[in-house]
Image (cartoon, rainbow, N blue to C red):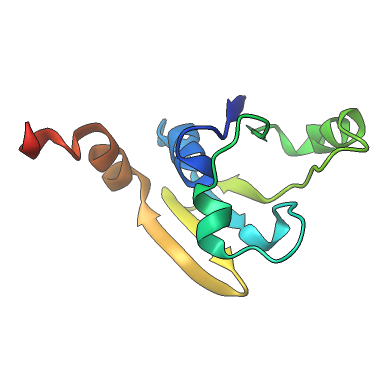
Length: 115
């Protein structure tokens, strides 16, 4: 699968991609290809329409790497069957460890009490 990182940046894209609740997601934000020093909040919420998050079988990662040779490309994480959480690490610290079903409820109904 593929998802753009336009609205909400990487954080929202990771969540939306995992809302099937079939697996958990573990990401190392230090592996995100960037130029210069970037803080975690910018990595998570920076919006642009020229970035894509791919999900692929482990045996196909090298095919993507070859296809995108010469472009910023990195394997930043993986899906895991052991849990159903979004786990984001940065500088060897766990920034986020949230149940995806709870995040999905907030995403779907977060503004409901206000209208």
